Length: 97
Image 1 (spheres, one colour):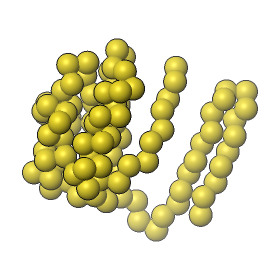
Image 2 (cartoon, one colour; image 1 turned 30 degrees about the horizontal axis):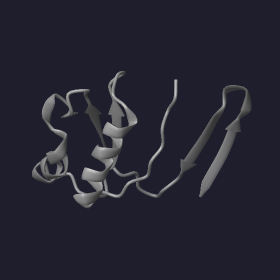
Image 3 (cartoon, rainbow, N blue to C red; image 1 turned 90 degrees about the horizontal axis):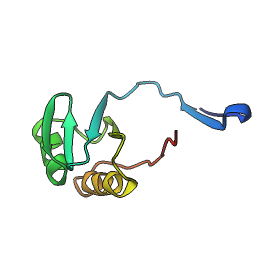
Image 4 (cartoon, rainbow, N blue to C red; image 1 turned 180 degrees about the vertical axis):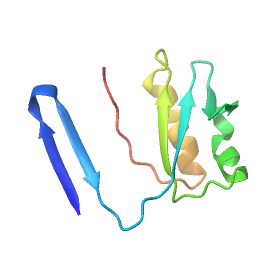
């Protein structure tokens, strides 16, 4: 079941999906130096997919990619492409502050 909740005064659209079982999640932080951090483990972003496989993170995990304040959208796009090439499904969304 899916709900779309527009919050017009704030310009926010919330999409919630209810599943019988929630998949685990992992967060990847991207730095301006193109280093990706999973928890406190840093690797070059171009090997992020390999590192996730080494860590036994399968494609059912909910992967969130977050850029540091000075990381541009091109760097985030590169990381999502690396994840896609490694077999992780990509659903893109950007938060603009």
